[in-house]
Image: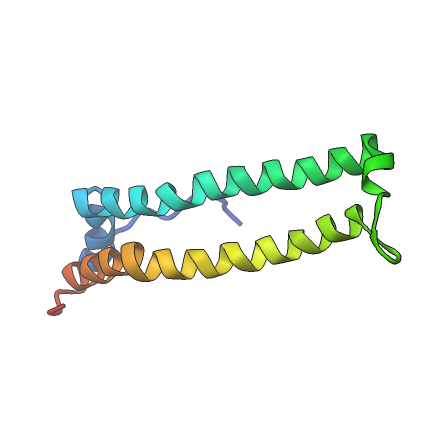
Length: 114
């Protein structure tokens, strides 16, 4: 079994390789990166803050807010909230910025009208 990537030989494969070298594909990648990199970095910082506070600021994290609910529990639940928020924001962003570029590029590659 070989782990080498097969070299495209047919004209159908070549159109995908040539499409990857177009300015439209570069713009599609830029549009995707414009959202993914900053949001991923922000989420990782937010998660690291939660972990670091849990490890090194135990007194702060164990502060009771209401009844038996403390700051650590609220931060933990906010991790789930932020995950769903990021997913929702990405769907909105992709609908406006990424999908139109991808649809246009797909139509160009497949030779169909947009």
